[in-house]
Image 1 (cartoon, one colour):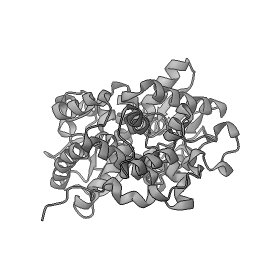
Image 2 (tube, rainbow, N blue to C red):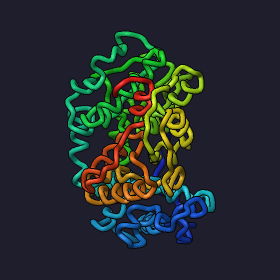
Image 3 (cartoon, rainbow, N blue to C red):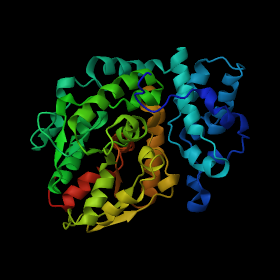
Image 4 (cartoon, rainbow, N blue to C red):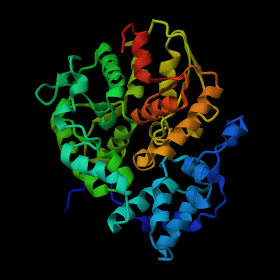
Length: 406
């Protein structure tokens, strides 16, 4: 019997009940309005809001899935545009599932896998990401030997040469983008300060493959997943902790069945919250600011991790925690989801700008989040708008309250 590497494969036809019984009720086109007091922020779907046509909303894409199933539609440029401007943020599913128990996000993910198998997806602009995966072991052009540069001088154990209880997995964006260096180092330093037995693969760390899976290239994703699973199991760690929600997503949903029994996967925000509760971390330094927390889509709607980051922020003296009108399960995507920024950067920036204006409406001085792609998009939006808004990773503020500079 062939060994299954990740979660069982599905094909689009297996979800035909979902897209055949979608009645186009349009509940997927707005947030849960009973939890949002300001009607300016009732829209929830970035592509539907931006491009206006029904095809860009979940109900329209469900109809497209039905049309593909019945061979009533032929893939073309317009269909591909609809499919790859979707940020896979799952806001539509958040609204739909409670009422109809449908899974539009999963339908769209499988539509992308169908597009890749049949050769009409992803977008041509995504090809450099794939090529870099094959040449460098990551999608962002970083030479493999530079993958661990972010960890220099931290004193972390080097796996597999040394043994540790926990593996710190930086993830593609944190390891590749110099503008995120402070954030990823802050996350590791907080964990080390708490006394965790922490190790890193450094230059041996390979891509988690999440971006390829988002684009629909499951074959390339599983190539990396297979190698990573073997590596992780040989390390003998009990915990894999990562600051990247996308890495946590594929580790929890795709890798988990083949990881050694007892290996836990945790996002750093979960670990920070636990350590604060246990008294292993005692933030005492004041961080005087009004900050609004942005829920990353994969961390929030995928895993219901909403309270842990807020518990961390509430534990920081001097910090006043504000909320977006669209918060927690109502949160608007930052613009960085689904591989959209690499093919449609103007649209991604437009979405981030919408979220920035919402943040400014709260009176906040800073946006805090816990995802590298959110940090990137908000940084671009602030620069484009000439805004005075600051952008921080959760770990940076926690570290500052612990008395250390990030």
